[in-house]
Image (cartoon, rainbow, N blue to C red):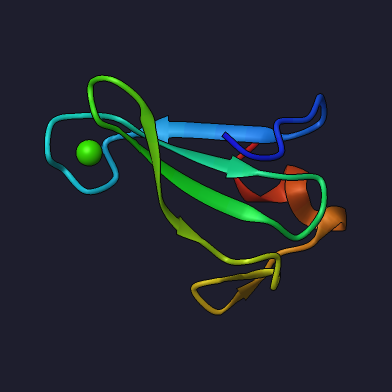
Length: 69
Ligand SMILES: [Ca+2]
């Protein structure tokens, strides 16, 4: 995975309801990445490319602790 840092936040869950967990990675910058486990490796299925956008929600460093925790 890209950009694993001490202050990153993670959320796991079966977000697409296929019976397997996925992993959301929230960096301490504006980056968000979404990974799927293939059974052998983590595959990045989506990223916001550091735009700070999450489905219309403006994500940034100051609100990383307000999203899920
Ligand atoms: Ca799933």
